[in-house]
Length: 266
Picture (cartoon, helix red, strand yellow):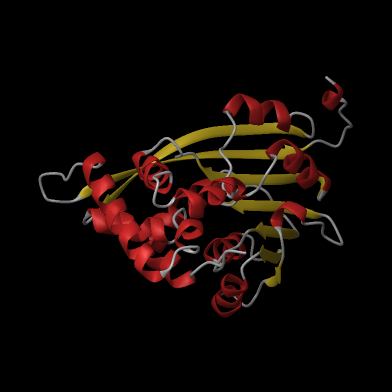
């Protein structure tokens, strides 16, 4: 199993938190008694969740021991556990499930949404944000290099780890089976980076992790040099030398229906 480096991930903490605030702003009116941060990482989103809903009992789940260790230090008020988000089944249903930048690591989103609905109390809320950037230069460069003759044998299995997001229409059709009120939107963030090297550092904390984790030190360094060269061709430096790193993300907020739906039969 690939583990994650909390310090690498947190290098761009403020930029990574913008989508969390945008997502939670859409549910500021609810009053959950229990909330789960599914794929909580180092508790950056968990802490914001706990601050917004300070009367709720907050839980966090992540498959990384390192991330959970960091989370317990950062926001000890929550209750944490290590586990697979795609198989999460709580002892008791919760009122709110937050999933920030996790869905793209999980398979079969249609079935996943149905399982998450089962884990919510009637009238409960699901709030999700996931990267929608597989067609961006940052990811196309990974695919190009990892598919080259030198790396393909080692890295080809890693492509299966991440799952492409579905379309807005597909998520809507899946959500209406279990949720009564649905809000879906897409936002592209323009992160202003000091240099192309900073984009590399950002990507090392997330999408590059599964690929670098199976390479030895020398091959990792050489892969990163090639990656830097590739993205330098795609992201033009602006007049001040900085680089605009476009990052599209998909969001949806859904309130669980209290009525049974048979739409899966259609």
